[in-house]
Image: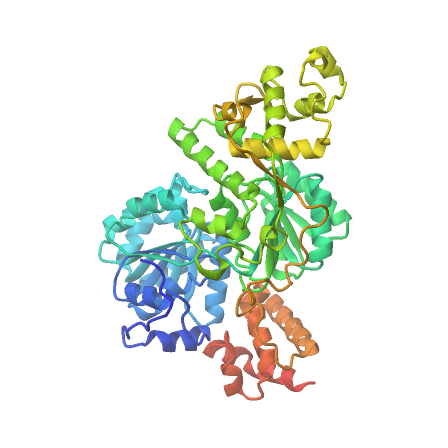
Length: 624
């Protein structure tokens, strides 16, 4: 079942109306997309699978039914940071919420358990490894459970990009609590992953609500990797100076190096990886969440538990493992709907490294085959000369139609279309060089032979005597790297798992060498390809939040409100966005309310926030 374009109103349940609870608790005027239909289905006791992009409003799909149904909603969540922020936000909204995880003392955990049994909780977040223990299952059996929500459900699938063994045991929920509705939610799952989610969580006869995967406010850009750190510095300085951002690297050492390089360049950057002391890791994450303009440099250990709405860019200095991983990680940007960027520096070494990691892993042949297919799909996204957004959406089975089907207006290829050229002769020269040198050498040596560079290695193996020596002098080293990378992406070359760094011909290379296969190569445009992601796209408005009418905007008032928010967040020990989102502050600035009733009509101001902060906010507004 796909998301509908309209949002039907859920029927009243347990004596309360969903829309009135949405307005009074969360301060929101209405549902988006299929939210209303999902909430009604779960509130009425139905099971379902929900696929909705990051920032699309997944949390409401289980939070609201938990408030409407009798009992406590149990939310399975994989990360303590995610639980902490969700619980803090709910408490700010007046919801009785808590978490059970390893960060609690024995006394604190006992108090949470007491409140659950006493019926004093609306929502309880539990880590998957704790939930499946006999003790926790016994505890839940004594409580009135409204529903089970399995967040980040892709973690249950071995084919997903973030498989977690502890999620496999969650099938016990359906066995032990068959009458309690179950809702599985994820932002990222291809067809294979969805199938396993359904099987493992016993959702075979349940509807699937699949929203559009499109994030129109995110600008996608993939550049040739030359000096990745220098390119990253330039990207941040020119387009995102002073913005919060996330930079992903493959290794811990790389994280440390990049964070130090950015910091030396005057960019406030902090490292995050599993090898850091837990106190340092927590401190760095807290600074990123609570302070403005911090860039976190991290391995993939960081991200899924981050709810920060104002991340303006996500950068990759190394190729992820799959399109799912890329989509999940870039989805950290622009959760507030404002213009944001997904930028990646990518080169041939990334493909070779990822392929080697797959080949050398101890996984089964089937798993390796699927992993190679996922890597090939991501390389195809990186190498495509066409709209990246269309390619990305097609991977998840979403076909873009209508006026935007050929040009999204907000990716590098659509903004600056690359030039294409007939590359058959170049491909033949390169493939011949690979063959003549014995298919035992890496990219640098092959390029040395092609351009006629007399290195010690070239003369040692006598490759200066070959017919292919110097036949590629019309291109420089960088250009040949681009050609070579594209031939790997097309499948005419592949890395040799038995010879580190070596490239060998595939079966399809024969057609190219015989002149039977057409080869079209992309030429990179010189210089910086696109400008700031804040620029307006050719599609017009990126999203309602991104380009909403500003009205009489007062930057001084916005600054005062943000300063007040920081002080309150510091006092309460929560991230600033838990107090008020940027979108809510912007709404206050635009509306300029002078009474509590007017302030109550600003999206994001629910009853409890009005009670807690209303008078203070009006006083700030009046102090012109």
